[in-house]
Amino acid sequence: MPPFDEYVNEIRSLWESRMLTNGGEKHAALEAALGAFFGEPHLSLCVNGHSGLEGILDVLGLTGEVLTTPFTFASTTNALVRRGLTPVFCDILPEDYTLDPAKLEEKITPRTSAILAVHVYGNLCHTEVIEAVAKKHGLKVIYDAAHAFGVTKKGVSAAAFGDAAMFSFHATKVFHTIEGGAAVFRTAGNKEAFDRWKNFGLQGDAAGVFGPNAKMNEFAAAMGLCNLRRLEACIAARKTAAARYRENLRGVKGLALPPAQPGVKSNYAYFPVVIDPAAFGCTRDALRDALAAQNIAARRYFYPLTSLSPAFGGRYAAADTPVAARVAENVLCLPLYEGLTDADIDRVCGVIIRNSECEIRN
Ligand SMILES: *Cc1c(COP(=O)(O)O)cnc(C)c1O
Image: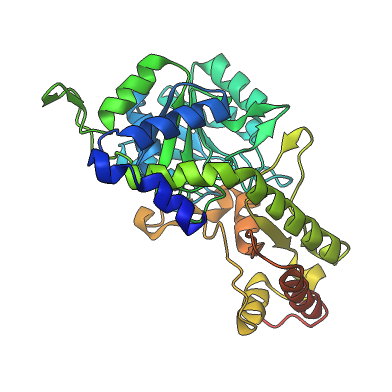
């Protein structure tokens, strides 16, 4: 969180304007600041990342089937189903957990309209290959960039890829507005359509499309203005913490550390480790329990695969996407945040190393 006084100063003018939402001064200032930060001007703020995704699907006019990954948060898949689209799940790459571009073409049918890929843990999708497949088959490309705020590939922002990208500014993300998000488009027309969509689809007094209420309020935008000033320091602190984890855990048998992609500047959003239980000596869940017993909250994330959501009623199988299934069963995200001390990191690593030496317990 920003210093309390800084936030209070940021919201002071709202007591004069009495403009609390519906696109006030803070909303305008944050849209401009983020547009400049990304180098992408056609950006629209919204109430959360999930609604950004639903709005993008509507604005791009998608129909039928969408190729996507099951190794993601519920939101990605829910957005497709809620907008009347059929997710077609493709497997991920074992090295960086993003969509495997080689698995896309075999799943394309005459009903396919788009690819919805997810940047995972601060790593980026193989955008060139994904977009080449899309171009060949006339598909739109959308990125769930909820994990990728501040991430760049060869200096190009994660916001710049595909037909549109969604960012989440939820309180748990690297950059946040308490709850919030943004949709980034390539054209002013799409941004304007999203601006209307998030305000009930109103054109004048009446709905031109059946939009929801998905506007970001002024207090959330003010939080974003404060947090954007601290972003660089926040990412630097995460980078230092991630390096210490890496140093401490290097060489632990059966423990895959987070991938580092060439040319990609990460935001160190997460520190996922993937366990090979036979080589490591205990299962992911046993390790999670051992950490929890020491008051250390490591998270199974992403788990389970969204294709296995009870809401699908067993329509999809883990065996359809074996790499994603293996990673989801064995991944654990270690605590990582600004303010995590070296001593904390060493304590977490101590528990992991002690457990790596024990027998398989379940
Ligand atoms: C956080 C997250 C979302 C949802 O964003 P909200 O702002 O919480 O609605 C979607 N996809 C991924 C991958 C996320 O991590």
